[in-house]
Image 1 (cartoon, rainbow, N blue to C red):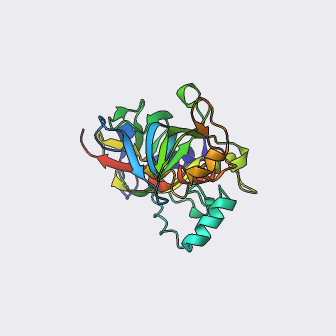
Image 2 (image 1 turned 180 degrees about the vertical axis):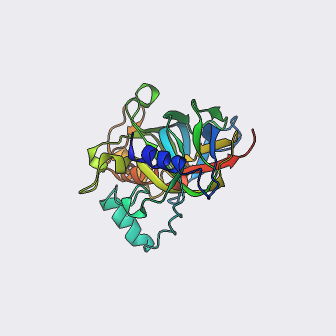
Image 3 (image 1 turned 60 degrees about the vertical axis):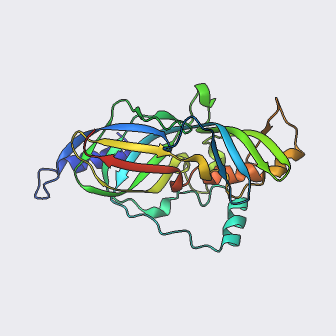
Length: 265
């Protein structure tokens, strides 16, 4: 039993005390953002690039609901944030351990692949369980997956347009030792913590998780990719270039995930 499951088991064991908390089970569904699926997913980054995604897949799970309060916004000066993110691609992802432990009140242990371009909610096998106590945040874990993800935790492809330049690109986020800060663990690199989740679980309800890829390339300058060589018509970004560094940071932030709960189906 891992640390999170042990914490939840201990919480369940105490549910008969005067707090009156009840153990509940619930369904889980996952998808991309709500939108018109007949249209391509296009958005404009903070650098003025119009990005249209043709692939956006995320391997997600487990997910925990926690009593821990969300972090306040990033108060670093924008220039300092940009420089630090450039130099330290894993340092300011939302998986940092300084958030503390909180208390787990719900969990979804199934790992699932989410097509972030599809708004259609699909059931997650096994659902979840927890206690009927308020949560404030969620913690999502990313994991490397074979198949369509090709051994990555996040895989993306698309085109970026600005001025007279069109850049077809592709790339991936692989959870490996390169993302581990000094003294950290690979599990810390997997975690996205502090996702807003102000909800109270109820028996028979539905927890819904949506993945939003529109912020994945803030800070990226796709023009840099054209200095390399395209393969099969696409430029592949990596952690060594500006686009890859931006992606490694943005794909692991709490803004990517939306978590809501409906007490009824």
